[in-house]
Length: 317
Ligand code: ADP
Ligand code: MG
Image 1: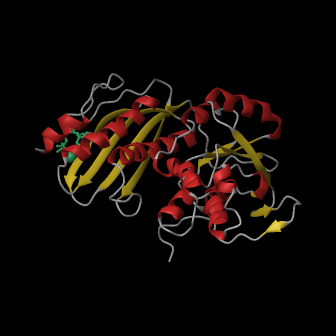
Image 2: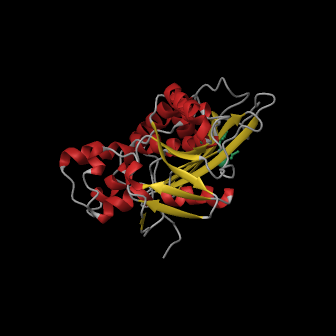
Image 3: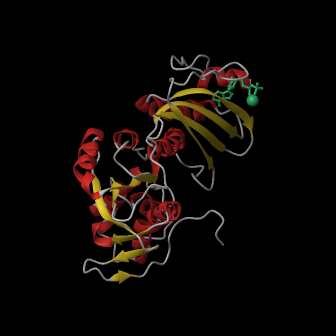
């Protein structure tokens, strides 16, 4: 039964692997001279998605969040494993889940080479592996005082969509329709991460909120930052709600954006912009790295704004 299910839903040709699904281990041959970038993420029903969410969307998102980690490292996606616990062998659910998963996989050339399948409350754990040339990974510890801070795409949409879904914020239907795709169908910035090799001094993907995730970079790099609130890129459907505290929190600390936040020396601005053009995604300069530690949020006049929440913490009270 379990083997049937694996054969039917998760076994496909894997030309990029020596041996894929079906044996005790997959066999992988990394490109000679490249470093492996490896990342795992776990998604739980009730915490990361709701039982009512579409299975294809869950398949899309569970791989997308792992690809986002590879993107934040500047790695080229190669292989993934998928461990899944599910309450019953629901064929229709698995078919749709696999469709969403493999569509995302095919977009980024990542191959499913193994995993584990067991009965239990719905849990999805993926390990993604990618390759990066030695010394070119975009690490969190490379930001330097004076560097520009950049963000890809727009932020706040996914968190605002969640606030709307949970009834914490009223939104016009037309605005809600514009922000919901960010929550259910995030786009990992894989091409941008690769294009930023040798240009960005540090990078992180925004999964738990801009301020908190940028905070990790500051801590690892032992620097500070000044961010200008008015410079933050957001959809008009998000900007329209900024008079609400909930909406401001969503933009600054909401999470689930899966955009890249990265730093680069000011003399590399043109290189950053052409990398973004190659990758087909907009990037926005939102502030600057400072030698003094701490994170300052400034208004358009350069005056400090209070920071209330910095990000999502699974273990916070
Ligand atoms: P073992 O008992 O040796 O761990 P399993 O019965 O768990 O083997 O898995 C059989 C094969 O199917 C292995 O190659 C494993 O990697 C693969 N596999 C199991 N579950 C999944 C899954 N959800 N997605 C992809 N491959 C899977
Ligand atoms: Mg097993």
